[in-house]
Length: 260
Length: 362
Image (tube, rainbow over all chains, first blue to last red; front, side):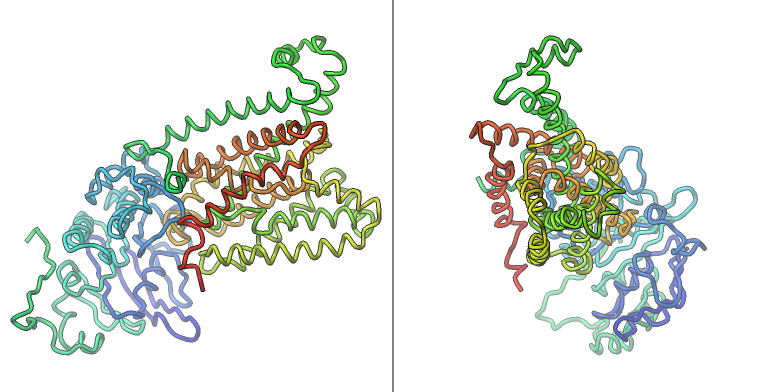
């Protein structure tokens, strides 16, 4: 289990995170939602060990994250960042292989190939990363994260996937595919933490939903308890939108997993 | 043409350039060997390949006394020095570009060389004055060590000024590099005003930027610096690759980012400072060699760093052979040769897609 306790981050006199407690349990797909500036990305930075909180601490299976070497952390969790741009033309395979090398894989090239085909990018191995579209780049990065933690549980220790807006530049089909891979990872005993903006996706995939606003946890629990009119209105300022159909002349498409 | 130069030369269909990297490294090693032979053999008295071979296999009597003296006292140290200087310059360029995540970062352009130059001039001018005890203590190592600290200071300053949240914009990098270089040049001017005649002569000779006057003493004085950088190379290669994805992503992949950056900054300063100390400022090697190599072997530092060492040595030896022969018996400054084909490559990079774009404009 990965735990954050009493996490507080203050920057320029403003509390980005205010006394946050969060438990990421193995086998659970945790989704964080909230408006812009709510502190979602900051929370992920703290939990991934990238940023030290001013107060509070984060522990991985009982060990404080401060005591973990970067190289050890890298074997326990992988992070999918928001859009990444490169100054040098690495190929898609070379990018993904970096993740496999970070895991300490014996055959990183082979693992990288497998990760690429898992995200549907077989045949893209030799493409220079800068020449890919935004969505393809995002999927290459997702493959890199998958190559870094190929097993949801290894040596009896659950591994974690942290996804910061994994669906940001993806089309509907790929949004679902990426989240399905993440859900499979959680179902197999891994830990998944994702930041999502699409409440429909969040409601569909989250086993545990965390609503963040002004650096505080406003609501937490199953999606039926958290995505309701009262909370959505107080956090996003849009009242009465939950479960309401658009006007009859507007077609709408809700993202839905293929498995159901 | 522009497009051909900007895109990778050829990528294996499976996207894995490991074999490509190994093959290019082997070719570079052969090229370096040939460049060494060229550098040893070429000059007013030509020493043929067969003469070199019989000499190398231990039959020193095969050469006339004059040829042997030329070979041992002039050409061998010169070749060794050119090899070390070229390797040091190219590797410091490649490392710096990885550190700044910018293919335009070159020690000569962003003022790191000027820092080494300022410190070298300070060593010459103050070496008999207030720094005399230090100079006595360090002997042969005094000049390279001073130049090392000079370039270390400027690299560090540049990094702090030009990098915000781990990102370096090309515009800030080049402009702050110019400012730092100008400041160093101004301070150098002040020191030169203070210098006496003999010191002025020393400064002028040093500043010409040449491999002329190479001695084994000079070779030995920079060997520890360049050697240390070569030893460090394999340990920073994976980190520099990961750093291309950004500080955060590199940390997520297990790289101790701050420690890596400190090591790279010190290595850049060691390679750049020591070479400037013995050979003056030779521009553009650090930008041309890594750029050309990225086209044929890809940007991975696993191959780029050793490739730059081999390629930089070969390039400088070839440039030096040209400098010695093209206007014989006069000798062109080697910096002229490297700038002649280096400056266009730099311009090309600057105008290319990774250079200054409208995004960079304030």
